[in-house]
Image (cartoon, rainbow, N blue to C red):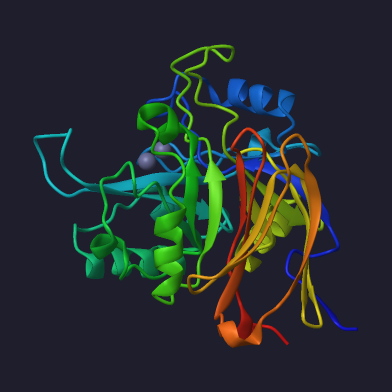
Length: 320
Ligand SMILES: [Zn+2]
Ligand SMILES: [Zn+2]
């Protein structure tokens, strides 16, 4: 029976933090210290995304570590009352740091507060070679009206660990589902957005809480960028999605030990499997119900500590 791999079956999973601040902006660690910390915690990929400062730290890359070039842009919607005004934050990942170097070094910023201006910014940055990720809408005080019209983003954050520390604003799956239901075909990532104002052992440390598992054919700049572009990754705060494929009418999932395995669709109904108390699940097989008319499917799992992993949405009209 024909098998359609949603997560690719070939390649290697590399653990990535795609949102990180160093002393170059308002973080407390140097770029070298960040590399060391993340390597010790099993990460292979770190995107350096300092506020408003594009940087290319590829000189830190070696056979076990990849530094992605980029920055975080922001557009505040008002001035004055920081506690109440909304803002838009966007991570930009450089797909080819050897191109358009001068223009990227200007770290261009979104040109306004309105959706059309942000979409123009996204289009222009895409033409410069950036992949754009829409960040932490919950923390940013954004509403559905603010983000529903955004286009040109390859992904958005479904979890941001810095925002979790800041106000329990970390996991915001509803915003991702809303984006998908408006027809926005973007993926989701989990990130740290670490600034490291607290030491590693402190409960307020904002590192190592949200990560993205990227499945690429090798740990090279081009292979990892290709995997990001294709959506060959999932977001997690702990659990692992090992396999996710369709076989005939069945949806098949293999995971690390978890207590809930759900496959969500474009509507209200989901496929569900939950473990009994003190037991766990490592796989689920669901028969698809054709009457649901789902436009997309995505998996969401949860372990006994309440930690999540989420795949991106896979749109069924793109599968053959
Ligand atoms: Zn931000
Ligand atoms: Zn940030």
